[in-house]
Image (cartoon, rainbow, N blue to C red; front, side, top):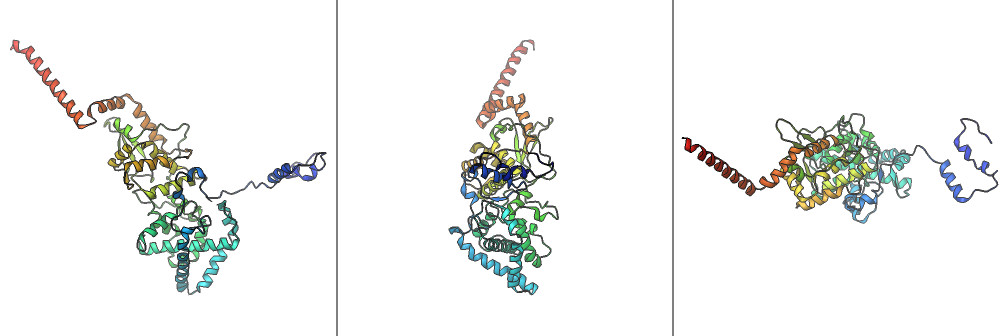
Length: 446
């Protein structure tokens, strides 16, 4: 049997064709055939999903909300129920504020929000992978309630200018909960509700600008986030975590090719060959690392951005890495975590980086900080490495003869004050001996 050119490929598998065969189709074949025929080649990526177990099992608390659930995944958890009544309060306050200014009943405003979200319900569903079978009404309610809660929360911060003005512990934890991968709603939903509410109260501000105020509080780097988001691209982010990821994106950076895993040297090993580690103050991007070496000055220096190592650091990095590992985005946060993991293998490395001023640890001990950084990349695949150039230069310097010989000399003679004193004394004795020797040689001729 022949087929016309250009006819649908599905026609080849039409069941009528196979009914002409002598053998009937078995059930397995029929099920697989159904999958092939109904395959959608344009399946979209779902940017909100439960973190895979190989990353979650390292530290489950880093992916679990502490105070408030956002979106459907953690809805109804017992430890988060106390904030549900607060959400309703925030919803009422937000609608009342906008309604009083616009002279619109809050019931009408709420209806507009519900209708806006309901019109996008099919697209909203595509944003979640592995979501429980919520009805449209249930999902609309979650989206509107959570979006209004987030907007009222960030609006309070924008007005008061202080994250801790209400309740310090709760506010900090809410800020952290808003960047958890499993605790997100689509960014376009937040933008739609923002346009219907906050934008009418503060037309001079954008949603991205207001969210930056909250993201600054979860940023563990010393340098504040730089607003490099291009105007007109506010709704291109998947969610709030995706927006934070965008703030960490390098500008005009060409990703080097990675063929082999770069050689790892710890901070202690680099110190032994004379490499100084200093804070990077002239950042081209928030996680920029640079290796500088001048043949004239002979002072090799690795510059690293200053970072605070605490619970926020761990939670934010783990969620950004989980987002990068299973999303079609660049892996620059994973690269940073890998680079830090290479530099830090023992508590001694933490001590050296702390002394150099590039790490400020709030974990109580160098052992805890070392264990934390050593575990962040557990189960992570290194797909790209943004530090190939400085790492190649480090390897080239480390493997050259002069640093190795200097390292041996330093460890043998001057790595402690007593060794340095002993070396100095030996040099003095040697010089005195040489002086006396030559003095005895020339005395008979004087």
